[in-house]
Length: 197
Image (tube, rainbow, N blue to C red):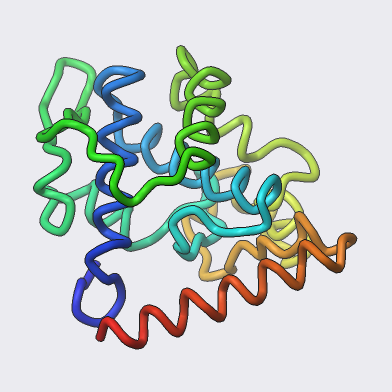
């Protein structure tokens, strides 16, 4: 995860504070849960509001849609997100705790409402539950894996990762106004990102 060529400060701040908020509301969380919750927030945001929440790329991996840069950040000691979360070893493996209090500067009321909805829906869910949710039949992960001929390999754990990208436009492809709004918003975010570098 390289701040200089991939993510700008406000994007990192929003992601970091979202992680803090999830941990404040749900307690310390393992890597897989955090990865899945970030994905679910992104998916629900596009489905409901036609706009990305974090504007991250996700790939079709064995345990669900994964943002590769976040996976690396959570597997090692956090570097880019070190001001927001820290890793702690427990008997059952690593979990993440918050480092700071939640700061809502980068969040709209709609953002907070969406996170609360996801926290309410998935509070108490373990890693397996979250993977099951993202792998459900006709989910973006399931359909992308099936269309690319890797579903059985992923489910049988013969194939751990792929570089197949999750296409969020599949969620809104039947609504042209939502699709137009999404594409315009992505262009705007790309423009903002280019100004930050």
